[in-house]
Amino acid sequence: MIKINKLLVVGILLLVLLVGFVLYSPRFLLYSSEYKKANAIILFLGPDFKARQKEANRLINDGMADYLIIPAYHKTYRIYDKETMKYLSPNLYSFKSGQKNIASSPSFYEDTHLEIIDAQKVMSIYGLKSAILVSSPYHMRRIKLIVMKVFDTNKGDFYFVPTSYEKAPANCWELSLADWKKVRNEYGKILWFFLYFPWSR
Image (cartoon, rainbow, N blue to C red; front, top):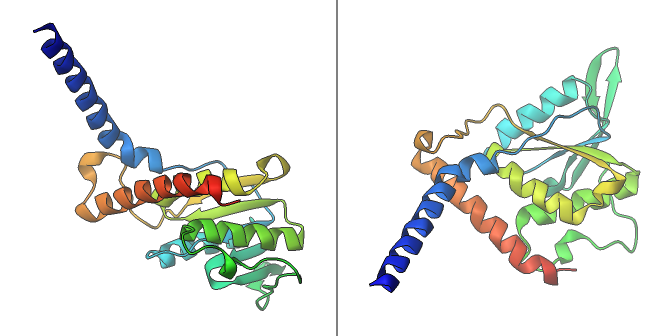
């Protein structure tokens, strides 16, 4: 009888923890930080790319960076300001001879991990030490976790700016089925990254 009561208590506690995790899970993903002018804006690919691009353009128009890096498209642009009119140079993307291109990375690498590796190499080539990372709101926690592993954050400044042009509720009761799918996918990708990362270097 005592064992049954203990199992019941443990079961209730586990259920409470599970419910608490589910309720908090969307909010945990919605990471952002304060930001200031940086060397580069790193723009991530995704199904809501137009909303992400719109946020990057806002930052460019506010004069917040000197370069725009779009790793998934292998594009790097120099941002100029001529008589207050912003414009971008032609694509400057290149790798120094001998540097490993992300195309040769193992196929099990998570896509965002590949983009961040690529961005790190581009920043190294151009001597860039700071970046504003732009993506979808639910994507930002995973980006931060990967950046902390790929970059030496003691030698650079990194700011995390989710697009404000994409809806991303924090309260679980406000999420649609599509939102829950995004949240579920993000946690699956975070788990996968932490499973393979110790063997990726």
